[in-house]
Each structure stands twice: as structure tokens, then as C-alpha cells.
Length: 214
Ligand SMILES: Cc1cc2nc3c(=O)[nH]c(=O)nc-3n(C[C@H](O)[C@H](O)[C@H](O)COP(=O)(O)O)c2cc1C
Image (cartoon, rainbow, N blue to C red):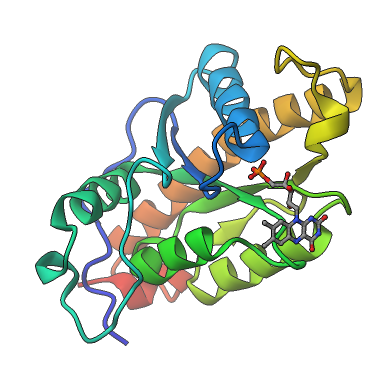
């Protein structure tokens, strides 16, 4: 397996770099709205640097393994997404529940960038009428398959019940869980990335990171 494109130059300094990936193409998406709130908490309360990759705005063509990504149709979108992925220490994937699974948009994102996930930590947000547990489990499974680390819990939202007409959260438990995820991802995202990079440099030790050494 070729993992040489894993960005090893992104040395961990300062605050955690958290990339939110918005996986709904729906206008006024509840998952994207919640993701923005979460990123704001991570930045303002826990000092993370944050970016959002809104896949409604940055359109990735359907992944085709026969095409070199940098030769395919929408080169600019792929480049923007790729730069953001390499920058990140940690990710929040926000997906609607589509038939008990993640949106095709999120799956397509994972198919493009799976080689960049080792040593990086993922948190999950899902909009669902049914708690979205299978959705988050499937995202977790895909991320594990790409050697990413996952937070052991996620945040599920019921758009109709959890927000008022102004888009404010009216569910106190949801607010607490968002704050918890923002905090945990800011802390664990940095710890795991730092340790992974340290392990990369310790040439003689037999660790998970060893396979990523050049
Ligand atoms: C194709 C499709 C499949 C869906 N499947 C489910 C489902 O299995 N379970 C569920 O609770 N909601 C399902 N929904 C509803 C969405 O999860 C729900 O509307 C969600 O709020 C959308 O998230 P968003 O506001 O971020 O776009 C489905 C919606 C669509 C369009």
C-alpha cells in the first residue's frame, strides 16, 4: 500500500488544527449548522485553530481511481480540499443520516483523502431522526480502515427538535455534548498527532507509526 503522500512535514506546534467537514449538500443543513457551532466552541473556548471544508461549496467530483486526482475535472476543489486535509491534526465529520449510513458526499471525501488520516483524530456529528448511531459507527469503521483514530462517542442532532426558528440550540444536553466534543477533540487531537510524529522520528522503535516512515 502506498502511503508516501501522508504529510509528514506538518509538525505539531501551537494549538490543535481542527478541520470540520460538512457532508450535506442541503441548503440550511442542520449538520453543517451544528458543525459551525462546534468549530466556534473549539476555537473560542479551547484555543484550536479551525477551518471548515463545506462540500456544498467545494464540489469534489466522484472519486475515480483511474484518474490521477490532480488531472481530473475540478482540479481547484481537489487542491483546496487536499490542502485543508494536510493542514489538519483532527477532523469533525458532519453527516446526515442517509438510510442508516453516511452521506455519499462524506464517503466520497474519505475515498479521496484516506492516505492522509494516519495519526489524526476524528469526531463525528450526525443529523438523524434515529440518533444516527449506525451512521457514526460506519464513519468510524471507514476511518479505522484508513488508520485514523476516532473519538469513542459522537453527537447526534434531531434538526426539528433541537433548534428554534433562529437556529439556536434549545436542547441543553446537545449543548453540553458539543462542548465536550470540542474540548476532547482539541485535547486528544493534539496529543495523538504529537505522539505519532514523535514515533515517526524514533527510527528504532516498533510502533504503529513505523510503517509511515520514509
Ligand atoms: C436520501 C435520504 C435518506 C435518509 N435516510 C434517513 C434515515 O435512514 N434515517 C433518518 O433518521 N433520516 C433519514 N433521512 C433524513 C435526514 O437524515 C434528515 O433530514 C437530516 O436532518 C438531514 O441532515 P441535514 O439537515 O444536515 O441535511 C434521509 C434523508 C435523505 C435525503
